[in-house]
Amino acid sequence: MAASGFDGVERRGLMFVLSSPSGAGKTTLSRMLLEREPGLKMSVSATTRLPRPGEVDGRDYFFVDKAKFEGMVEQGELLEWATVFDNLYGTPRAPVEAALSAGRDVLFDIDWQGTQQLHQKASADVVRVFILPPSAADLEKRLHTRAQDSDEVIRGRMSRASHELSHWAEYDFIVVNQTVDDAFAEVQSILKAERLKRERRTGLTEFVRRLQRQLEK
Ligand code: 5GP
Image 1 (cartoon, helix red, strand yellow):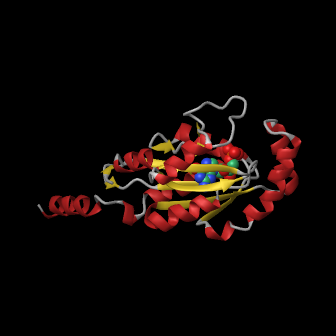
Image 2 (cartoon, rainbow, N blue to C red):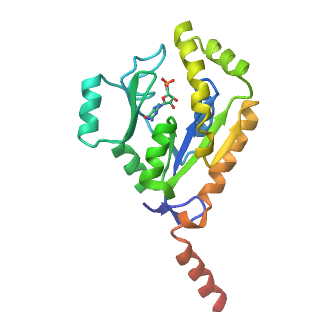
Image 3 (cartoon, rainbow, N blue to C red):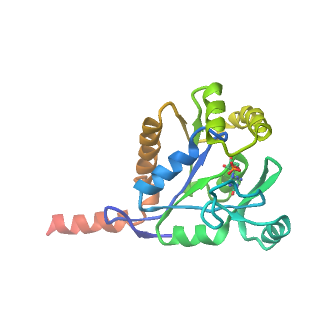
């Protein structure tokens, strides 16, 4: 799980998890991170939910039927999976393992159930960030502006939001999304700091030894 880091010191990739109730701005923040952080790759989940307008199979999700999803679970192809809003969602294992071993960081847009499972399996590699909306009214406004779901689905998402919020304490970092630019700066700082953690910098011993050899010449 090592590859050359941005400053020449080898490091392991990390799993960067962003969770929030739907509508708290997580999708926008994920997109901004992917645009500005070339070392970061999105984990594309499999789901049994139907595509929303504009969503592309293989880019936003792998849209599969229930039988296919259950087959993936049986074959151990998913790193984690959960039922969310009556649909199944799960993270394909192979692309994540390939990215981490190539020294790339992986971004996850998954719920608290998936985050718990990832953390149980690989706590040292997981960084958990929870995004809070500044208010309930803001969350509702964003769900309506998105205009991708029916009123009934939006009502369901609002009532589920309160339950999802209760998991905030299971995360390492909490970001309140008051303005997207500030929230993005905060999320990006977390990623940058986590990349510098000593434990992930597998090439440090070698790097420092080289410095010492040069100093002692
Ligand atoms: P949506 O249907 O709005 O795209 O996603 C609904 C919820 O499912 C979001 O909270 C999202 O984070 C979560 N989710 C998406 N993919 C996965 C996954 O692979 N695993 C888990 N546990 N949750 C997921």
